[in-house]
Image 1 (tube, rainbow, N blue to C red):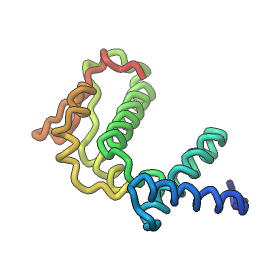
Image 2: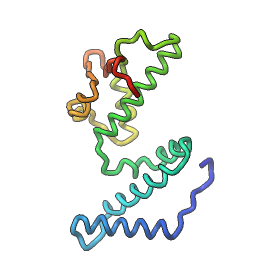
Image 3: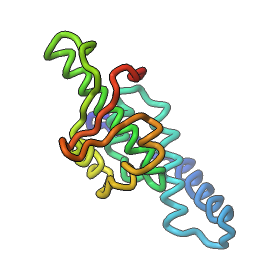
Image 4: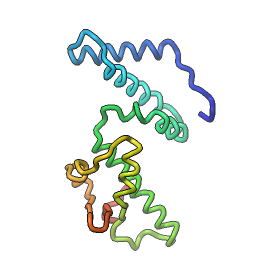
Length: 157
């Protein structure tokens, strides 16, 4: 983007209006609410951003995260953020020691995940920690150390 704006055309506005109306009809309403409009904005942005180059996608996702995360499954979002932190921890370990193969588990500080979650206005992580998504992904919570552990042998991403 770098200071260049993305022009919005009349057809984009018309599409958002139609999607808002369709969302209202799916909920059996004769009128459009703010939720319907926000959902239409999310769908339009998701579609637009997915067509961009990776570098531009990251910038756009950061700029429009308020709309992109609208009515999304927060456990899935937190799981993606946590996996990103695990990847970063692996990269950091590899840079520092030259290898990450000696690790039995990767540890991420709970406060790091909380900081990332706060960027998306997610304050309470307790429901996520007790969710089946968290357990199925093989993460372990260690309150004593204040870390989330992930077995190194399971890293496939």
